Amino acid sequence: MTPPSPAAIDELKAALGPSGWTQDAFEIAPHLTEWRNRWTGETPILLKPGSTDEVSRAVTICARHGVAIIPQGGNTGLVGGQIPFGEVLLSTRRLRTVRDVTPLDDAMTLEAGVTLLEAQQHAAAADRYFPLSLAAEGTATLGGVISTNAGGTQVLRYGMMRDLVLGIEAVMPNGEVFKGLKRLRKDNTGYDLKQLLIGAEGTLGVVTAATLKLFPVMRSRAVAMVGLESAAASIELLARAKAETGGGVEAFELMKRLGAELVLKNIPDTRWPLDPIPDWSVLIEITSGTPGGAEAQMERLLEVAFEEGLINDAAIAQNDAQRAAFWRLREEHSAALKPEGGGWKHDVSVPISRIAEFIDEATAAVERFHPGARVSVFGHIGDGNLHYDVIPGVGQDIPAFIGRWKEGSHVVHDIVARYDGSISAEHGLGRLKTDEVRRYKTPLEIETMRAIRAAIDPQRIMNPAVLF
Image (cartoon, rainbow, N blue to C red):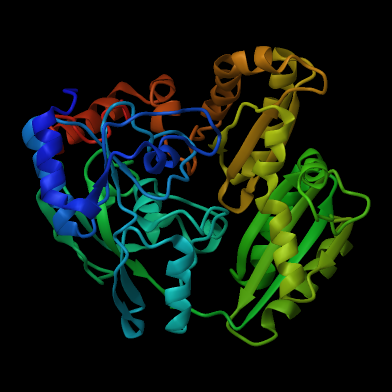
């Protein structure tokens, strides 16, 4: 792509005004790195538009000059798609307006810079529930989670981000504004254009606002940690939980013992509620619209699970503080792995019925490829999504281990592909997997996606290094 000329930079500055841009290195620096410290980027200017109109002006100028743009939300992405390498960086964090909350429509319209946590709070203030939840929700913004089609812990019951979006407003690569903010559940009038933008990782436009689905507030909630002997038992337990609650299972999170041990080792003020730590733990959350209903369902489920030999230990959170403590143990898994020297991170999905089989086969393959490596498995098995992370063995050469990351990922991902799975369940492709995914996509899939992109962004100015 053409580097921004001084004339293009001056035009952007004039269009956005003094508060709409910065070239201050100190202010820009946090936008150029990501949580895993895999990339450190660079940009000639950080754009900070405060409205959809300002985003439109900026994109129009970039399109006219053939200048590439990287849209960025809360910078919580894990695959590097939000990091610029010479492109103009456009942050949507100043798009903060709550445009509308309509409880009778079970919908709210918020701008892209609102954080996920704030979206949950706006819904709660209207006695409604917005279910998408993930560990970075205090920082992750709606524009980012829409552009990456984020998942999180409640997909089992409510679906991915694309299932929660009713309408979208976005600035297209030529600077025009797509005005698709509708509250409709039914609209069969042609292609669903908003779904093209969801999960496109900023390659088809800049999401500036969205209308989101809301749900009734559940009147009771129960959380338990249970111990199991095998991953296979967790799949049987999931099926039993769904049947016993009539669909009331909101979250079902699997954790291998290694991950639990590292949480206790590396995260302060943590205690596993089961002693001894079992080979496998599952965090279960059940909700109900009836006061006391979730608690009764949880007790009945655990009683049946003990009788059938599916679980060997259990602890039920007795209050909000204990529920938060249980969830913290799950949410700190990624942070707990970091002090172990880095690793090969895999955000994969396979059919739920084959999760246990996949874990066994992949772990055996990893151990053959790199003897002594340790495997940590955790994730949302209610929707088939596993975070399958491989870390160096104690005392192993860490740089040498990290140097085998690409080959090691092929070992894992080749097995995922054989199971008709996905090498990116919820994080997206970004810079990390854009090249590798060609190994698993058919030529027809790749060419179709390229054709869509060429039709919408013929100059390829939007996040040009991402997606084929």
